[in-house]
Image (cartoon, rainbow, N blue to C red; front, side, top):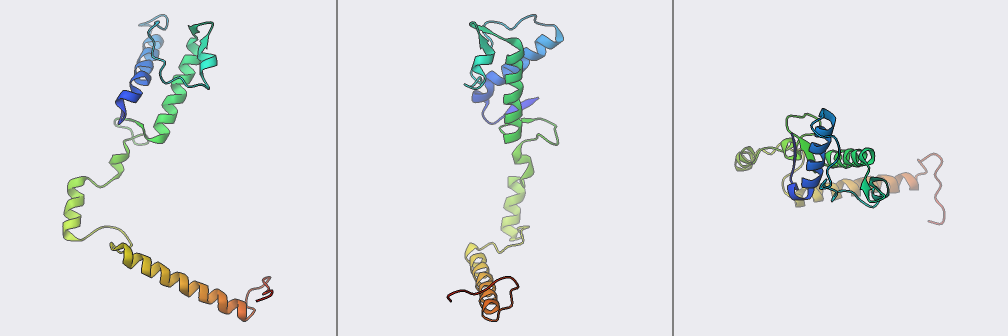
Length: 149
């Protein structure tokens, strides 16, 4: 089953997927006049709408293209899927996160205080820049020459 955080935006696409399934299983013979087209963008319009009629093959390709884009972006996911699951499933659940916050045991390899982290990074950068400066002064870098100071 497909799901989305943007159910209203993706309602037409979901309905189109259902229509394609009905066409493929023989429940429908043709695309109905009321087929959703709100997801058909300018790139697909010349193909999907020819002579004022929906072209089934192009319509199906457009639906599949939009489905692929939605799955890749995470806007659409498949319940029970490992590859196309909801992005929230990769996060620590809210209750567990609150327990970890309260216990001050956040599983990250950086300090929780951003100023502490930034100071440490600034110190490391300063140290690395000093090494480069000394290396340049002592001509320690092969293929690098100091020109005009």
